[in-house]
Image (cartoon, rainbow over all chains, first blue to last red; front, side):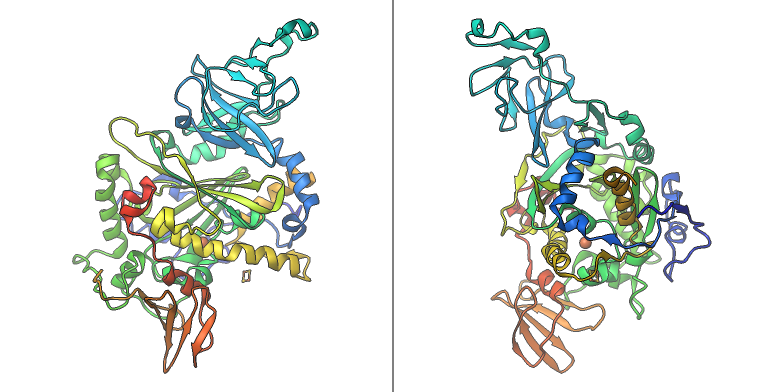
Length: 452
Length: 79
Ligand code: FES
Ligand SMILES: [Fe+2]
């Protein structure tokens, strides 16, 4: 895995037949922002990725020690803890943290453990005036100072000034709160700078959390995550949208600590060997059943421009005239970003933001979450509470049409895990370009976990 | 969407018709052949023995109407 990363020349590289994403942008009815004009294709080597990364407890344990205990990770939204004492419990691979708002309005994070005999301090999200342990009653202020030890005559050896809750580094970006379990970690600014520069135009701090849905998925967290890191799978996993998605024409860009896959909507997949009308694409995009009429497009308007115009009007009430500054691509395409290792905000008006992580220390199951970020006008609406789906509940029960698409991805996940447990092949073989975001994730993982 | 129309879609590669039945099974018509499949693509009956499992998953997964979805996202309807 340790092959050096090579820059590719976007104008002279092996790629899918059909229109490129940049050529498609040339047809936009609005001015295309610089950020969509960036291209950063990379060759990350063509080596297989070892399946032990998905199937062994040893690899999971190394991930916990070398990655999860050391890396910046998204814990919650700032809006989840607006008032003093508001806190959430954030767990990663069996380790629990409290993220809370102090009286002074700052955000702090503590290991979720009493300093007496170690009981977890907070089992649930909520609002607290103090952090009092439910075992023997040791108590800390929201700022982490020890304020009460019942029968303190018996603890002459406990000095309050040395018995504050340890502080865990926190940072915020785009309205998200990040923590780093490593008190000697690298600065957050270095970690976020690639992604932050991409999102200058799409300020996620101005959005609110409209929905938050979570589910335990029966597969390693990377299997779950990688199901959403390329558009190559669309032809087999989501055949119904092939008529409205330029799946293999996606543009994939890799930077140091973030990567993106941009998949154009309303352009025919090069994998289809027949012509599609603009109306065929609209039918597929809107999921209009066979036999039902599809809307007529205005004279001289193609499907992209028409759907983009509709999306502008649909968003105008909440986003205001900002919609007029956004180009068609920003209104209809899929701008899927990934910040290493597990945070996936989408750009522009697409509301999706995913997070994937191990489910405790079970390396064969994962927590998958989808947060929907929406613009609003006027007062900030309260953030949605998390909704946990039961094992047999489909994503469509909470997220409708979008959830139906996730259910197809979810249909694969346990079968990928099972297949990797059964295969005689030591590694998985990835596409060089279309799956280069998956390669990049493994390249970074190799650096963190294997020290490559 | 009219009431009588069953959810149905043509496969983008084979052009076979996938049509949801009222009992949740999926009828697939491929040329002169036809078969009935479970929602995960398992064959039930008919001379057509194979279907695309993902299109069976798709067509049989009809979400509740937006007003019954719990999340505000779904309620906003502009998905
Ligand atoms: S074709 Fe991708 S896992 Fe089989
Ligand atoms: Fe997918």
